Length: 391
Image 1 (cartoon, one colour):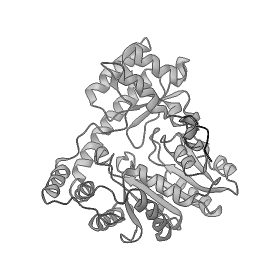
Image 2 (tube, one colour):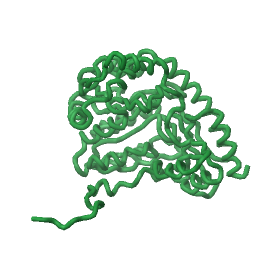
Image 3 (tube, helix red, strand yellow):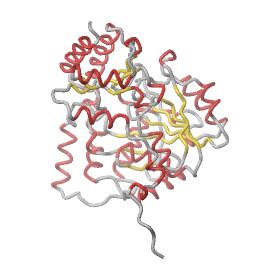
Image 4 (cartoon, helix red, strand yellow):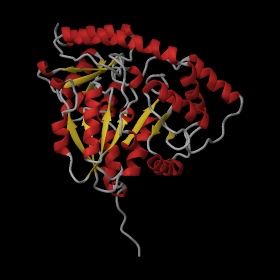
């Protein structure tokens, strides 16, 4: 039987058609159309990948290391990563069964959610947060449930509010500390309380810790290292931020063997393996690039102190971020919405920042400014923001 032709729009899957475009990408179409912009918008280090990493990649190319690796990833890398996670965060993962190397942290989030969610199951997403969490839950057939956090609490979890959102359909919780966009972190007592909630309600926790190495205040505590949490934690991380390796697209996912095995099924049918050269580069990063990471972190901290103090002097109340490389500034005193502030600032002074609403509805009244930008450009950007505010 023949069928009546439909429009191309009707051929798009309903759950994909229903997704809104990324709040960041939609805004940056405006940025690309404007010359002379100082961009504080992109979450990408302005440093080049350390030379020792690039040199190792070149060497491996010269050796002809251009074939597939195991679906789980290069074993040498998994062994080194297991050792590195143990030394830095007290984590214990079997390199043969509990670690898979992925195409960036984004693929790790995707395969984790697709492996655990049945249609209609709920995932609580702590906001403001990375723009991909809620859409990725929806694409996996799940239902994202927003758990807002607020500046008055230092953007930390309100556990009463969290527990009120848990239903019989709740399968998991996504947390990200240090947080993008607020820079907030959770202290050990907060994490221990989170662990109690997860155990009481039998929840899995997807813990995105990609900014762990960019922690400025105290030591980062990894959720999976707490007693009883390894069996219900999926650790997502990667090399993009701390090692300035965004374009290499290399990340990892760690968790219980049974869950990782299920996630590797999706990984092997869709990706097969992460790029081989990127895996050798990541191996070198773990072995020999720690000094480079420390130097970059020190520079980010210098920039953080400058821009946060400058914003506060301009009347844009901004908490001191404890990690990552973003300042989340309160612009409510201007009377403008987040979108209006960013659009007008771009047109009037050619400075690009991201509306807080891109990271969840509770981000209204805020802007995100990345300080992974040269110090001189940060100084110029602050001068332009001051002119925009009439100060």
